[in-house]
Every structure is written in structure tokens, then in C-alpha cells.
Length: 302
Image 1 (tube, rainbow, N blue to C red):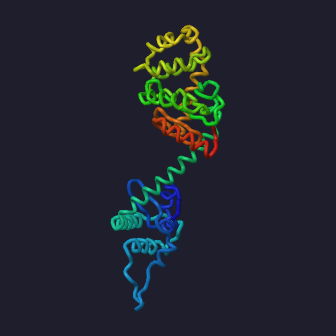
Image 2: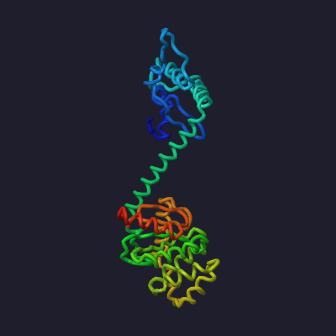
Image 3: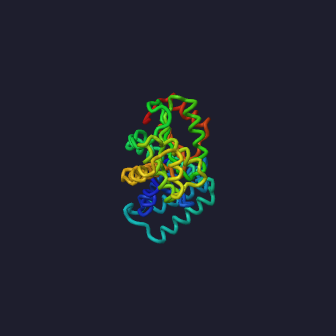
């Protein structure tokens, strides 16, 4: 079967050549794929021992009709309105006779989209490798020279991120060779963005992790309580307020958002474990399994 992209197939329908190549077409739920070529259409009409043509199956009948309709037509000539209607009727007849083809087409489309998605993710990982795994602004939990890197995208107002804190902490306690890169990814509005900048700006004072844990333990993080939490962990508030206004922190957050979106991470938490993208919460056992898989295959990016 041809794997011609959907847009190209839609374009091909405007010419007679397209009909011969793509006929008959499957139309349903926005799907339109080539299911046979005209080279096989006429040959599908078999003759019986008595020399009489056997009755073609519904699919063969549809293919034969389109082949006959286009056989004597200039392939560069667009379809006439009457021909378009006739082809539409044939396609409808085909689908009614073979409804299971829609499931097959849907599964095929999903497989193609998944393959394309994975290729795009690998491309982004390769082009943004340093900013994802080795940014100087990011805090690293665990072994800074560890053999496997986990990148976590999180928001301080994300309930599942608060649950993930325990899993990630337990992982670094159990596995002394893993490194976890913390990525500020505020998706819940200005309060989360404010907390993210404050957290990044706390790193020069050497208090990032204590501040991070305290923010995660807070039920709701807002502009009103961020500095109170910062003071409770021993941060110099005046220095923190000045530091967090530096453009580099806003730029880092914007970059995190761009990369995460391009990788298909639209919610939090989101994890990258070498070349594997995992949108959503991961329990400790799953984290351990993914780390073991990377060690077995070897790091491609981390």
C-alpha cells in the first residue's frame, strides 16, 4: 500500500491521473487514503472456465468503475462536476460495502503519526541537547556526573508534580548514579511563573532544593506567599527579589516552554529519560525501569 501523505492525496483527486493512482479512495472521519492502483483494477476481473466474466466483488466493482471512467480521459484534465459526483457515489458505495476499512485506515494513520511524532522528538532532542540536559541555570538533583539523566518539567501548583517529588527523591536516594534535572515549566498562570523565577534565582544563594521542596509542599503557591516561603528556608529576600528580575530567568522559562511544547509535553509533570518522552506522572518503579533500559542500551543524549 502506498503511504502517500494525506495532503498529497487530496491534491491528487483534482486530476484524472490522481484518480487512476489513488482509486478507489476511502473517505471517512476526515480520512482519505489510496486503497488500490488502477494497474490492478482491470486485471482483477477474472473470467470463468466458460469464458464468461465472473461477478466482481464490491471492492473490485468500485475499482473497475473508476478505471473505466478515467481510461479514455486526458490525465491532466480536471474532473468535471458530474465525474466528481460519480466518484463520490462510488466511494460511498465502497465504504458501505467495506466499513471495516475505516478501522484499518485509522490504525494506519495513527501508526504513521506516531512514527512522525517520534522522529520530530528525536530531532528536537538533538538540536536542543545542551539546553535540555546541561543548562547552567537548572538545578541538578543526585549525581551531577551521573550516567543517566532524567529531566522533569514541573509547575509548583501542579498536584501531580507534588506527588512526583517523593518519587524522584526516593529514586536519587536508591540510585546514586542518576542525575535529575529540574525544569521550571509554569503552565498555571502568573503565580506559577513568579514562583518559577524566584526558584531559579535562589540557586546563587545555594538554597534551591530547600526552596523547591518548601514550594512543593505548599497547597497553593501565589505571589503573596512565595517570599514568605523563601524567608522560611533562609533566603535573603532582598537579594532574591533583585536576582529574579534578571532577563535570563524569563528567557530560561520561555525556552523551557518552547522545547517542552515541541516535544509534546503540554502538561505537568513531564519527564525526559534520554530519548524517551513521558508526559505525565511516573511512579518510582517505572522510573527505575526506564533508567535501567537506558543503561542497557546506552545514552543517546543524556
